[in-house]
Length: 365
Ligand code: 8OZ
Image (cartoon, rainbow, N blue to C red; front, side, top):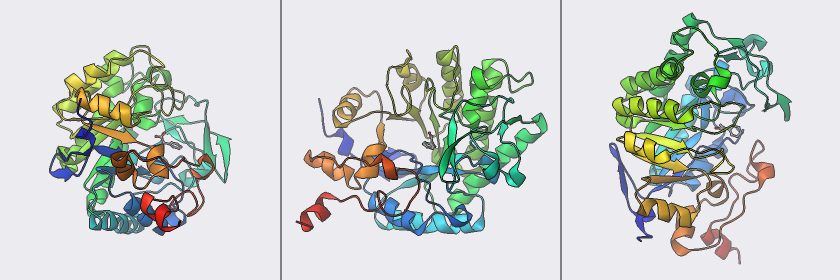
C-alpha cells in the first residue's frame, strides 16, 4: 500500500493540484457589510494555500439564496472585488481555489430575505431545523413554493454567479447540490411534492440540479465546474425512499455534462458514515471525472481509499479549520490542533486566523 499518494500532484481539468487534499467548504459567518468577504478571509484562505484545492465556504448566488447571517455572496460588484483579494492571495502562495455556490431554498429566515418575504422552496413545507440569524439560532421560516415561471431565474442566478466567480479569479466553482439546500430539496422526495416537470419522478426531481449544472458548465466550461452531493444525509430535514436510484441517475447525467468533479459526502454530514446503506462505488464507476470523497476522513482512511483507487481526492473539513498547515502535519505524522466549535460560526480572528502552524508553534517556544 502506497501511503504517499495523498502528497502526489493531481491534474484537475486544466489545473494541477500540488497534492490530493481538498479543504472542504466550511461556513464561517464572518462576511459583515454587504456580505462581502471579510479582509480576514484573505488571510484565512491564504494560510491554507498548501491544500491541493481550497473550496470556499458556501456563497449565495442572490440575496434570496442566503440562509444564515453574514455568509458571503458572489452577486454584487463589491463581493466580486472582495473575493478577488482572496484568490490573488491564494494564487500568490501557489494554491488553487474554487468557490462554492449555493441557494439555500427553504433553509432561511424572513429576516434574511428581500423585503422580509418567505424563503422559497420546491413545495411549501417547512423544514424541522434551525438557522443562525440575529446572533442566535432560530427556527427556519415557513417557505412558499416556487412558481414554475421562477425557475429560469434561479438557473440564471447560478450562471451569473459562476461568471462572477471567474471574474473574481477563481479556478472554478462547486455547485452546492448537497445538505438539504435548494437543489437537494428539489431532488429529494420529502421536500418536493410538486406535480409539474420538476416534481414526481426521479427525472423530474433531478431536473433543476442538472439544469443548473448545464448552465454553469456552459458559462465557464465543464472543466471548471464541480458539484457536491450528499445522497443519504438527513441534514436539513431531507430524505428519499430510493437514494441509490436517484443519485445513480443524477451522476450519470453529471458525467454526460463532463463536469470536472463530483464531491460526495458519504453518510450523514459531519456524522456517521454508515447511517444508511449506499453504494458509493456505483457513483465512482458512473462518473468519468474526478471523485472527491468527504466525511470523517483521517489520514489513515484517506491513504486506504486512495490506495484502493476508490477516490481521487480527499476533502477534510474541521481538520483544515484548526490546522492551516494540515498537509505538512500529515507529511510529518505530527499531532493536529483541535478545532474549537465555539468559534466556528461568526466572530473575528479568534478561531479563524489564529490557529498555529508547526512552525509558528515552534517559534513561540
Ligand atoms: C454548517 C452551518 C451552516 C451551513 C452545509 C453550508 O451544511 C453548510 C452549512 C454548514 O453545507
